[in-house]
Amino acid sequence: MKTKGILIVVSGFSGAGKGTLMKALLKKYGEQYALSVSATTRSPREGEIPGREYFFISTEEFEKKIAKDELIEYAKYVDNYYGTPRDYVEQQLDAGKDVILEIEIQGALKVKKKFPDTLLLFVTPPTAPELKARLIGRGTESLDVVESRLRRACEEAEGMDKYDYLVVNDDLDTCVEQMHAIIQGEHLRCSRNTVFISEIKKQLEELKGE
Image (cartoon, rainbow, N blue to C red; front, top):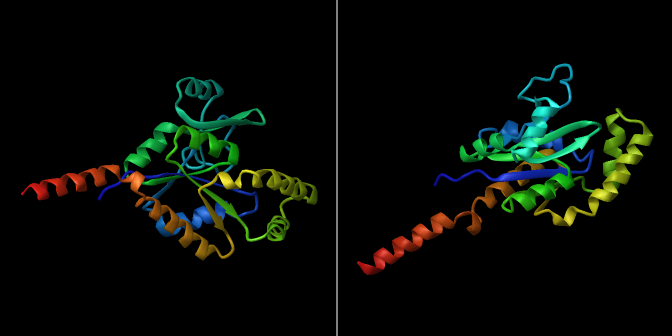
């Protein structure tokens, strides 16, 4: 039974390991998933390839997309727009791929409001001290930045219960399997299989009449 893909939004605290988790999931089950590519008005950084990291477009072009409702969600950070192009996502879903958007909570809830069938997954480490240890362990940020990320995590934690599933990223391999199982299970949800259910009912009625 060929099914349309599911739109999935993955959020989580900075330092929860979302990026590593997404890479591992795509490496193992890449043929089933597509990671959504965002559009942005910022300039490409060294090594970034248009269409891989981002679709790089002008501010004028981006604002036209907003006006035409061609973005699933968008936000503005430090004078640059970032958003998810609707056409790319819909092409992937129609091809039967499950499309993953890795965005923050406010964007996630906007997507869910616009597309109620969206599956929301929240990635978290097993404990708050572990989150702090991971942020420090990166070695890329000052203690001030680590503290600000922890304060942000306190705010983000307020929205955790609005998500459909919690994914505790303790052991990476276990976490990949858990996330894959959640998404595959969603494909079998009755509300996502109304056409199949109608067809079975119709066939049963026909058999009853024979």
